[in-house]
Length: 254
Image (cartoon, rainbow, N blue to C red; front, side):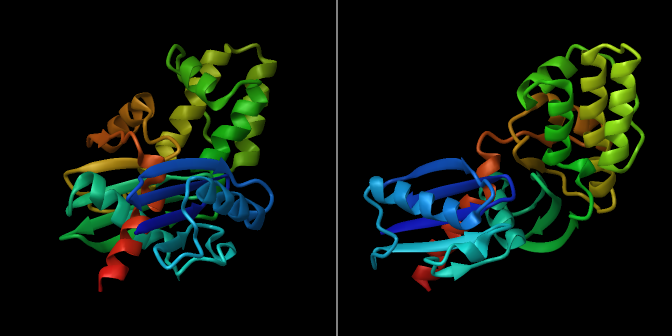
């Protein structure tokens, strides 16, 4: 048996497979979730995993989950991310997921979701904000983080991405160091994520998932702003897909 979790995000699509063969891979979502879904299906078939087989169970989640027309079940992001985070951090934890278009804070107690918050109306505390600012500075997101680590924070106070970008443009025009601007950008995202998470009574154990999940630099800043330790996770960007695969397996066993 194979249990496949597919998380179609706004910017990246993640796939996790459990069973006789275990693998994980990520693809850019691109403009069409449907096309990305077909590419995932072809990639799985090349690995000997036929989603049409009775020996394969598929759970889809994420922004474009409806596009996965071969899924056996479609499950919400909160449920899948909570299940994946629980696998990484245990039955009592808080999961902070910084995605491309939204940020989620999920509180898990006794293995069950107790509460959650989402910031899905503004990109200022998400990966999209970092992508826009990195493009403005002419660097990749990784280069943005590398630069930020050597810079001094310049305040970016705007809560709106458009106005924040104007602040960055002004700093560039004033001849400010790119390292200092980069430090301000990363600090701004961490501040907005901490502001969202700080609205809840967080667990003792807090993990970071999503595209920034393995960044020790970002988790250090976020920890300082929350006044609580936030742990990076090696496979955190796959949390939703891992959770979906686990749920596929659990549903099969019922």
